[in-house]
Image (cartoon, rainbow, N blue to C red; front, top):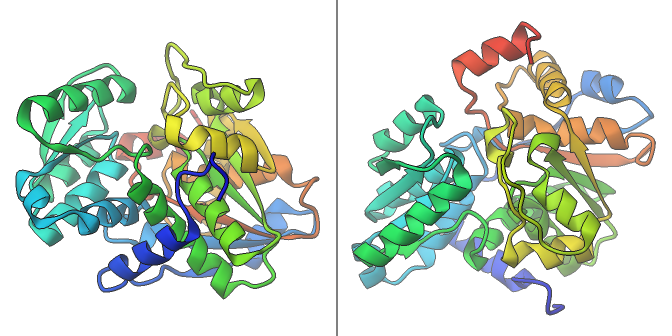
Length: 326
């Protein structure tokens, strides 16, 4: 693989074997009404990562990391920073494998996600104004307590875990021509591009980021890693202020395109998915469809995959989405 690539295809295959006893493949479904909503003759295939035990693909990432750890490292425990889905994924894997888990979240984080992490047995530390500051808290505590950091993006086993859902998609749907994936840190997209290359398929991968948290997009456009001073989006899983070291070069090299979507566009896509699929979707989980709406002229007539990568939306946020105030 090129030097820019953090993992090889074999890493995804190995991760799949570690995950296989615990996580069955998630459904890949098409909805004629969704095809009509998107238009331009596009046939949409939805990967239901919201059907995992934690309702998000990041359970693959957490289990991929913890299942690869040595027993003595598992005993010491792990720590991660999260706004919820990564933390739940690590917490679920820790409960399964008997690994102590600490999750650092920003002050004011989604209380329902905090509750879910605690219910899985994780210790939740609330400190910092946003995800990026919570990352700094996790790094400090890891050093003080001798814990293994499980970064949501900058970890090869995380990216390999994310790649397993793309492997399932492409093995099931041979005619797929494009994937439109949300980008927070980039594990979804880089994992998918690794699989595309490994299988020798001509599938284009597009990235989507919230306009109010556009660091990865801005960095991709500028050709260098940038950090933004703040974020403003209801899509918690996309609320990152920087591009990440381990995924940036691969995103820059491999993405066929990259778009940003407003919160209003994400909310509109969420309402479409709720109406058509009858699946509860959070902001980050609806971003792929919102991005596809922007890319539909470019992707006209093609088979396109999107991912519902999270179903953990807070009740008050969902109410605002449904009443049109977002």
